Image 1: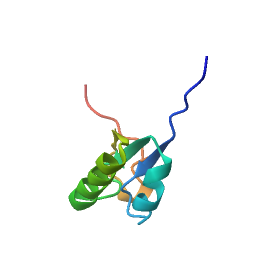
Image 2: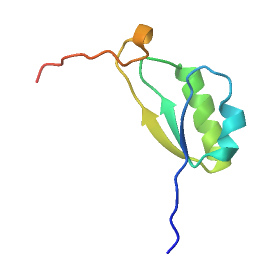
Image 3: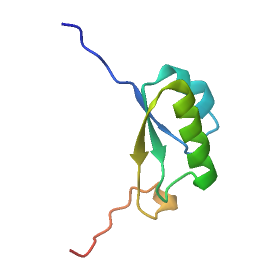
Image 4: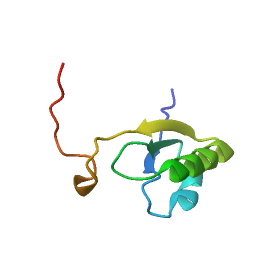
Length: 77
């Protein structure tokens, strides 16, 4: 039996390399939280992924640009 490896990449984070990487990946985790990207970036990367047949996933985060969305927050139940 042959194994399949899904190559995924965090995209839409403002690094201007999304188009160059898209042909090498199977899944794109697109920034749609507060740490990076914008509505315009989100739309552009979705369009790129659709054109390349790449699966789309959400890369969400907290409102924490300074720590790239990785600061720990405690949320009420």
